[in-house]
Image 1 (cartoon, rainbow, N blue to C red):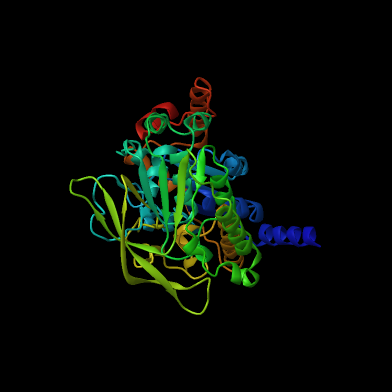
Image 2 (cartoon, rainbow, N blue to C red):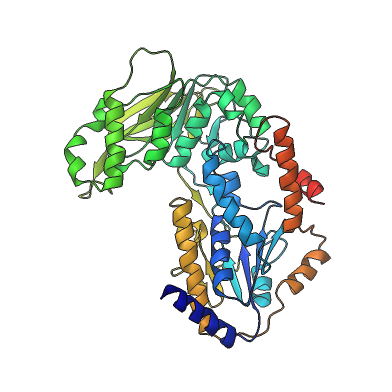
Length: 461
């Protein structure tokens, strides 16, 4: 039955669409590639152009996934198949709002699909946030993953204690990289400049600070399990943070229950007086101020919080009168990302940091998916589900509309060439890819990433 439906759907498109359907996708991360995969499968007459700001594809998979998680990057094999489809074209080194406008894309294509993600750090907006060695987690992730804008990040790891504010998976990634043995990181695609700094790191103690309690922790069981198994690292919890937690275990859904049980088990087996690096999750604390007598952060001031609200998983943290201080030599803020308004004509919700949309549709012929549409939530699997859903929405819209002739890439190419923009096509990216892998082989790594746009363009050419 399913095969019959798919065949019927394709027959409808082949008879009802008398011209090529031209779609541009802005952003070559998971959302962009998954949406393209669905569209090219379900619209035989489609021509998809995937535009990317950087000369290299894959977005979050290349620049967000931790270097010691190579298995997560296996989705690139699927993206490669989509990019090599005869109806798909990758065009790198093109910035929306600078090299090409939103209006120009709408005039050139039947569908504009915005998937350029979330690339701005959320701010705590507290005093001292601009002190030296108060660093956003996104910047550190970009630094060790080769994001060009962060390859010169100034980070001082010459002292012992780091405090990470936030308890999501990104926060744990940063904690794990800071505490991992360098010999293990040498086997990954971590950047050489990060490896050199980490090899001389004196960080021995990392706090992971959250406003709410263990029942609301945002990290996943996989990430926590990795930390608990990390070589030469001991995890320390506070017994007081878990008061009453065991009593509510029967009420929890299975994923949350398993995560909570793992924390409780770790709490019971904490090793005392052991020579090891220390990972210390701390709950019920909200930052108030970064303190220093110099220009480098020295302390974190926070309030002790309590939770209010009837739903134990969605309770809100509010400050009590109790205030505490924590000495730290490095402070990392990991409280989420927000999207940017790449072009002033894109309908944008500045308060939420997302494109204004209803289930992925912005307006006739304009759609969005991924973190630009939903905010920075979920993992790659949830991004895939969202992208497939929005792509299906596009298919339905096209089926019910009239398709007029559009110039597509022909007109955009002329605009870009007139400006002297060096376009990076898939064949050019493959040169970069081969170069990075060869450089990696020479030092025993899967790849050595190029970390400047200038070098990427040089190799691509």
